[in-house]
Length: 157
Image (cartoon, rainbow, N blue to C red; front, top):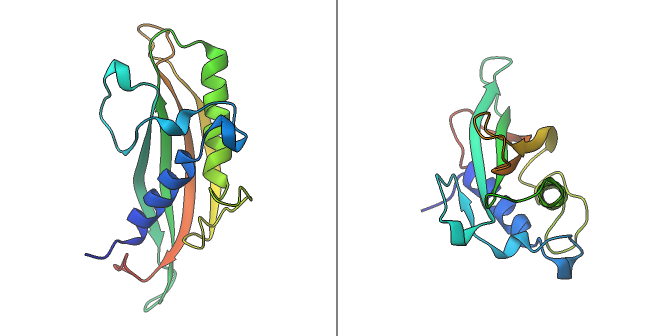
């Protein structure tokens, strides 16, 4: 079975996140933990862990029979943390995730095209995940837009 462009984007993001380690120049070893697609929850002993979420893709066709459409795929990377993680640690993990998302895992060079899969990536927002009922840091999230070209109704080309 062939993978569509969205799956390829998620796979590349997971590959980049797996490179987060002190040995690679990051501040944490976050990449050694679980990195899953759209996880619902983790067990306490698995934390910290990373979830990659490809959310809504928006496409606009400018004229009839347009062959390639610009797609804007909303993505999030969430880090799930143990209760009691302090704000400094959460910020370090968030900074590592932001750095990893935009860098090729092998060369560590900035690459907003995800190895040629995308046209560009644009940051949207990032910060701690703090439920209002507890005000404890449960995690952190970075949201960004991945722009890519695809034929109408065809994620495989």
